[in-house]
Length: 210
Length: 210
Image (cartoon, rainbow over all chains, first blue to last red; front, side, top):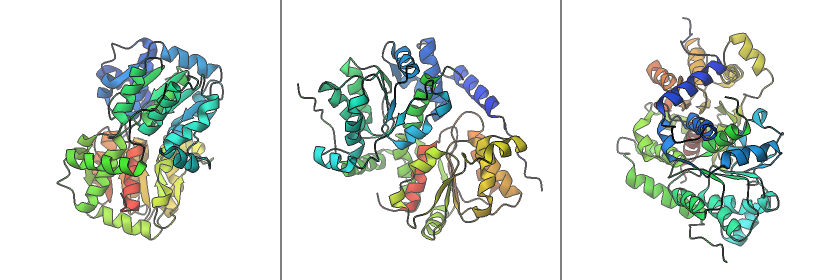
């Protein structure tokens, strides 16, 4: 028998159709045009239009992040899955995409600081963190640790994608990021988040192409 | 000022606490004990206890997949993000984790077959697909293409993790997988899914450790 099934096989058409469905179903009115493109891509990554209500932007963060990326800012990720979700062809300045989780210094740093490896890995971002784009898509402890570093005077990133996922600390770490007041954040509030949403935010900031 | 914030810093305790919250909140009664461990880990990956209602298992698929992995079955993934989500330390036989999406043959295969690169990449699985564990966490076209290959007589995997995400074809490809009747599937029905959930399913099948 023939095995052929009926489905759309053209990648560009799948994208167009997907984004049209998102824009027809999701409540996007409260976003600026620049924010809306980021929100649409986050929704695309998770298949849930209702996530629109959980996405929050600090004022001007999209423009600041775009400017930083065009100027060559590095992108720091808390997990390899985030780094592998960033589409290199969309990056405007062949920006470095860096995940330090597997660095050989990290286990000792984690033991010394009494924190997770995900949090300890941020120590290796410190020198280049000023003006960078930071994407936390996995570990709440990484976002808490980033906030601690900022409270202790570490240089401020151009944008902080705060999208750790899960049941312990995820919602709380994003609340703390928003409450900090001085951080240029993009968050998905609550328990939802993850590497795909964080990478989607980066991909939207990197290029206006849909 | 001191920057210290109040949060749980111990990875093992975060896991224990997370899994306890999931088991207290999610509706897991309809699962066998083996299925329940897989469902809990999928929920853990997405932060949504309500996803329990969308998870479906073919009869016996968990045991079949565990046996295959212990015997050294390779794990084929449709996206690098899935492959990077598989925790190598949990694999029982140092199983190969393979994503062929970036193989140099794939663009020409996609053009020749008039399909996406995600779907075309499956041609390179064919020879080793019998008895393998397959994880589709991104592209509906990859899951549709897998079904076409099976309908055309390709060798049957030991387990098919069907968790593509999105608005075009995701729900339909998973319905087709369940309807096929002969495939050992684990799916998250509907639009939800993604690389984190697919990798979580693999991680649960690979080891009973929580």
